Length: 256
Image 1 (cartoon, rainbow, N blue to C red):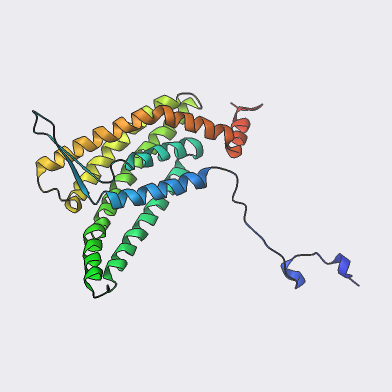
Image 2: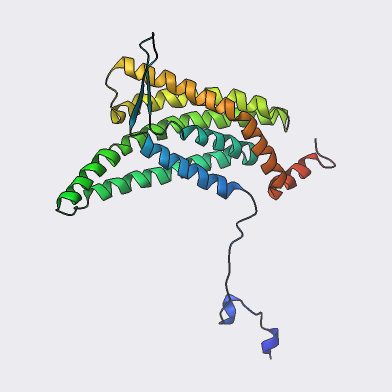
């Protein structure tokens, strides 16, 4: 006869509570980087719905046109570079798709918020009008960002991962320099072409000024950030136990 002592404790077949069970989330930095990218993409989508003009460059007639998300969006590429370098192109694709799934959910939520009936007083109606003006066109910006960022960041990630396969741990700065310009160029052209309607750009000249300035600004910011980006990547590599295990396995006895 089986005694109680022989019955495996805390099992689903024992008929008793099995206690609290949790999945292992690991010890990498990926979840923090992913959360940061999601926040940056969502806030950039809101900010980019506002057109911004800093006037014209004296003596040129070139108008400095951008959008309200210009100061945030380069961070998404910096985070993409870090994720690709640490966790590979598969993780980068997951981060990109997760970011835009969250951004799409946000834009749908904005439309639901706008559609809900406001308070009928003067303040309620004024707020309703403000929400319609501020959040109404965000879905166009999200669509533009989805097309541009998917294409640009995918190219950016592909360049980083291919160069890393050839050079290994060496050549980090070269990878960041090479990938940044290509990704930002493709992204900005696609984004500006679609988002112009939401921002209020109505002429080819304004579109060209918006696009040229966007490419130059984003590439300059990314290049200026490369010393910081590379330092962050090296620190994360040292402190991420999953990366250290993979590095030890790749460089240990018997490795190529």
